[in-house]
Length: 469
Image 1 (cartoon, rainbow, N blue to C red):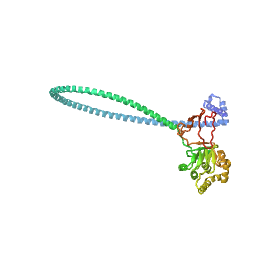
Image 2: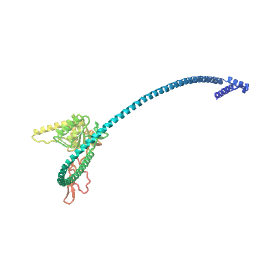
Image 3: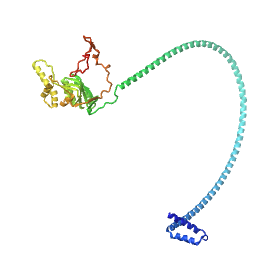
């Protein structure tokens, strides 16, 4: 605020000094001058004011110089303008002279053209007279020709009339034939059209049937890749892939070849993922076939896992217990017992057969006893301790305790079933054929005879009226 006041005082003092000193008392001027001289800020502003006046004088001088330069340039441009005007006038005069020459030449050419035109008209007039004479001569010749042709034309017309009459008759016959042919073609086209419509309908129906069949085939399949796991057992769930081999019913000659071929096939295809030997119900069978299956399992590059769903007995139980890894449902049954054989012959022959039986026992049953951690004799004693027949049977959740099976599973997820199973009415086997064989007993009561169950199985059936027997 103080700076603005000082500036105001400086400007005010300057204005007073610039005015006529006679208009104000000298005392006032001296008083203000004293104030100005005493204040340092006012002195500073005064210096700035003087500097601005000097800069203003410099700018004024520069403007004067620039104005003189512009005046010189303007004079130079005016001279150039006058010079160009003179040049344009000279060019205009030159063009006027050229134009006069061209006009004279044009008039000369016009006269020459008129002369040439007159000559051509004279020539055309001569040619027209010659043309008129020739036309008259030509008309005379034409008249003579017409007279000659007139007689010929009359004769031709008479012949044409006769031919026309004959042609009309032929044409009438042709039209009748064409009409009949057209009607026949129309009927044939109509039949062909109807046949084509039927063919199109049949093709459309065939396409719809094929599309439906294809859709049914698609719906009858899982249509996603099978899952292969190196470790298929997770949280009590066992996942079986299509690398599975079924071992059911009885092991007889040819069973080992059937199993071994599939073990080799799956190894050739991939030796990382496990192979599953699935036993639903197998009652055992040939020791020789069973030993061949064991050898193939033990020599397989891919691990072979045995899966027991319901029953694994005798030789099948040996295969289960000696597998690298085995799985079973808790309610699956595993049965071990001594070998059975049917021997005949003399004493020596019977003793020889007995020795063979002992050797087989040593080869296939001794490894099971070793896995259990007991001797063969103790194994046999436990068989008869369990049952008077020597058939030692255990459910899966007990068999794991004595090392007949390695793992108990909660459920088995079989991913190999990638097609819709055949319905019962479509199946070849007569699964429930007995249900259709209703009979009447001596008292007049209806009943159905049930089939025999597999060993170790029992009926658990609600039957208050003794209908099922």
